[in-house]
Image 1 (cartoon, one colour):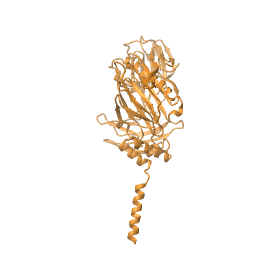
Image 2 (image 1 turned 30 degrees about the horizontal axis):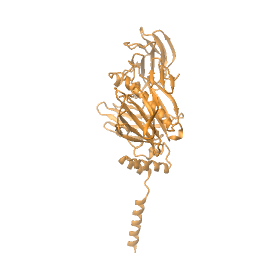
Image 3 (image 1 turned 60 degrees about the horizontal axis):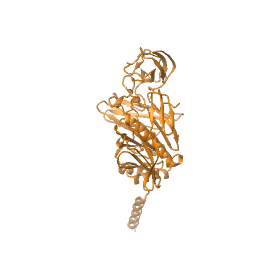
Image 4 (image 1 turned 135 degrees about the horizontal axis):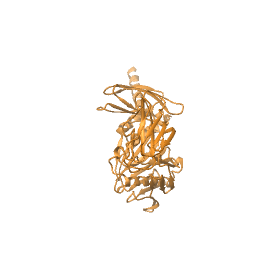
Length: 455
């Protein structure tokens, strides 16, 4: 009798274990292994069912840490903290081959993050800030007129301060000179800086206060933590969509663009594609916030290597962002016509190492875009001839295309009509970074030619 009861209980336990509903963590582990759409949907559905909020989703993931990468030759450790990381926690992680690294961070009252870290000897740590026991500030000085061949200005600094070398930190181009100032010690007040540019007239100083300019001489106190070399303009958002474009002035190229021919056709094609996407999303109802549970960012590329941002080769972005991660698409364009050659896709959901999740899509391929619940919101197809994209709402007949034989000249926004497509708008953006004027299908946009800020 006892044997029969024991056998019965064993069978019941086995059946119960077999029928148990998988937890969100278990489903996340399975999705990490399979990377199928079915398992992704099961995982995010379980997250919602178990009541995980945006920050807690990282705790249910197989890897709720930062992304650790290092170069064995230079012994440089890069640590990228994701927004889904746990706040208020701390932990140690093995860092081969030279030791361990300790992190600790808490949320500041303004919503930012305070962090402390220590690293093995002879290692540098980059955590979206400058490493080491130093204080850094940045500023840039604008020329009164665009001109080539000017040397770096002479800089006078208080004792102990120095200019940091390296083109992501300090440099000169046809429009400006920019500097990173550094001194040993943390949280030091900014220095008073004097710049003499010889025969080059100075127009203005950015990233600074107490500025005085007299011909080729400028005095100021830097306030920025790094030189404000970004040169982009945001455009009015609508619904879940926001966008911006960087500006490109010949003679400002740096980093990987220094020895690359000025990307004139690529710049025009990228601007046309971005504004065509804006129009296309409006046409299918994305001017309503509830059309997409999340955010969608559209943008171009930088060619002046701002603060070391390597944005090569030329491309435009489509970035849907939702609670379980960000989907970053880089559509590379060719220099001849501006046609799309490929899409470099980075899946930045919180369960996987982003650098191990790069996928390349080619003309003719289709990929899904997910909303905040992990459901497919729309699908994007790269047209087979590279002329553009087709966007199709999931579970709907609504769709649009953006396409042009030579996208550097113009891109049409097309809607379906019977068995064909009808052009409803032609996009041909023209940007003049010297005057700060951009002609778009939405009207003329004026911006500061020193910063890109809207006027």
